[in-house]
Image 1 (cartoon, helix red, strand yellow):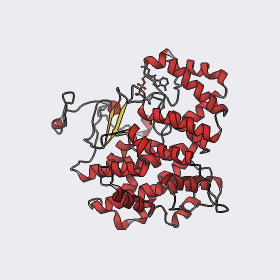
Image 2 (cartoon, rainbow, N blue to C red; image 1 turned 45 degrees about the vertical axis):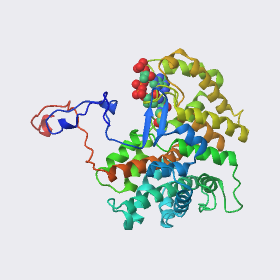
Image 3 (tube, rainbow, N blue to C red; image 1 turned 90 degrees about the vertical axis):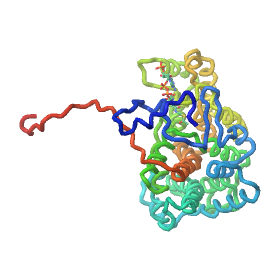
Image 4 (cartoon, rainbow, N blue to C red; image 1 turned 120 degrees about the horizontal axis):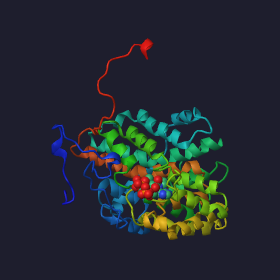
Length: 405
Ligand code: ACO
């Protein structure tokens, strides 16, 4: 698999030589068959299938199956997989007590780091990572329980009763039911919103070795259990330069506050002496339009129309900002296109999902990729990940007694 532009430095191991590559800009940490990205062409393939085709013809759970198993399921396999996932949507009742211990205003990502890691405490019976059946059931449990836990975070913050999953609904309908439903009346789910939610999960399902997926692999390389590994991925995703960007987009739109101030913020983003960056623009890998952004752009219009939200002041600022940035010389020259977080933030705002839940939704979708990468690594020969460093501190010196410092 090594191409002409790849230098294999693995033979330098143990010979005192190593490469220095801060931010891993040009270092492949593993081989993988799951996802291919060509950032220059704006191409994203899962197991060879273009993301645009999956978004149009597939659905989130079918894409989860594809990522985990390498092939699209046939009708019987799909039925069995969906049944299997929907059988695992409930969480142990003791987790309710876990949630009760959190402050009502805790950030939902803080709660998710805790409760997802805590799942391991309920499944001692299936934590043998060398057993493929244990790995499969852990993957199913994680994919199934993430929407339930995500909705529980929201309900806890509102002081509303937790909603049990309704397994007669689809994955995304069930999530909306647990988020916005109440025990007082049957949930009313708009099919446009359910479809948009499913596509949001699907478009976030995997993105090869980003910071959170690399973290999951690194945690997994020590032999840690999958729930602990996914919890470490959630922690990494929380940062504003990664999954927290869609939340940061909305905070930025609120800070801009009025269309008349957009130019001022564009100017700030271009000022080298100002650390401000236009949130939702730019990507480490895509130096062309992110193909997921194009799909998101389309469903954004559908959802705004269905929710009658076209005139929401923040959404109007977002649309104007997008137009200006797409035409501005600085952003065009640096290839800073709106990324997937820009549109997902707008869509989720229109659906009524609170800003601090945005990254939780990203984490829910990305669980498929995290667990597929973890499983791929564990299924093949691997070594514990142990990056090296360039030491820049003091050379050896003698301890100074307290009175001499
Ligand atoms: N606004 C203004 N200028 C920007 C922005 C931005 N959003 N993003 C990059 N730039 C500029 C940088 O200042 C730099 O300019 P210079 O060459 O004059 O020094 C140049 O573009 C390249 O930027 P880098 O930081 O080197 O690009 P990198 O690939 O390391 O960073 C990143 C990518 C982190 C996504 C960056 O574009 C950014 O901070 N964007 C805003 C946050 C965001 O939207 N994150 C979501 C990422 S997508 C995801 O996680 C799914």
